[in-house]
Length: 61
Image (cartoon, rainbow, N blue to C red; front, side):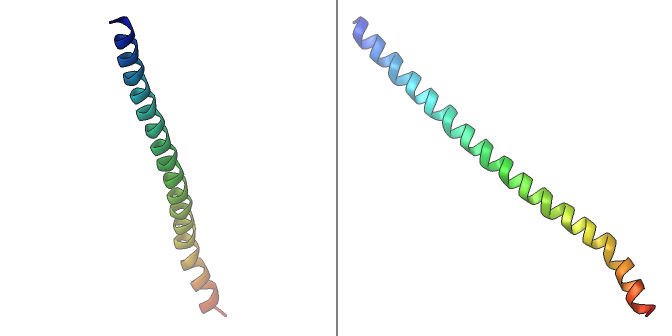
């Protein structure tokens, strides 16, 4: 009886560990995605701020 209970506990523990590991992977990929999207967002903000300045300089030539 004790061996079966230990085996059952081990199986449950392994499932729990694998769920935590997959959750960790999804958090890492989410963080990477957010980091990349924030870089592109920052780039777009900078370009949108510089575009009117650039157009004004070009039109004054």
